[in-house]
Length: 262
Image (cartoon, rainbow, N blue to C red):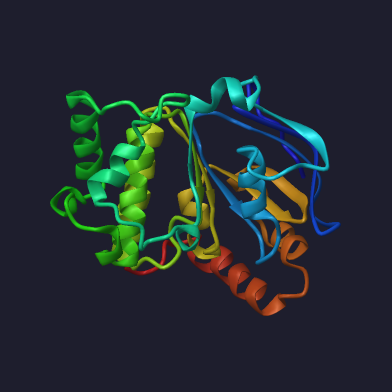
């Protein structure tokens, strides 16, 4: 089931991406609405992170095309913030938490500019929003996993983008940090931002997201959560992992998708 959005912020048409001649995404076609919390859900190796990288033109596509804000990426890149998986970052790089936040103030084609007092104020405010201002002078190598994730969220906020692409922002963080991150995302949504998140926890997905993409190399479904996040669609997405799906079905039927206990 593919439900298309009116006046989409993201359009993906006939997208195919391969690694070593093996398709990771196959003939993917969807549109996504603006101003929503959107989850990308599927099993490991389904192509979820690849999809975000493709949206950012970080990897080559075999076929298809992508439009963001009804335009080419290069013309709207300043409107988009991308936060990769935490594991892909060199956390031994000699930078402070404030340095990371200030990276969000760089502009394309002007990476050697001096930061203004306004830039520093914006970075400090973003660190405050993610509860990391007290750690501003600390080296990123000294942070916990959850603190590292919040530092990179501050960098994303400092970009003052309209579209945020988040690759597994809840991976490796404790329940308290996850709760603070989702509260931040919801506040961003209230400000009119669009947040696209790669997510693994099926139990919390229905509470977190207004719109969901189910993907397993091909796009299984895309649309409002109430219509897409069903046992039938999950079975089609996850294939033979029936034990997990049975548990999800029980959650759907008995507890109406509760957020996990904190």
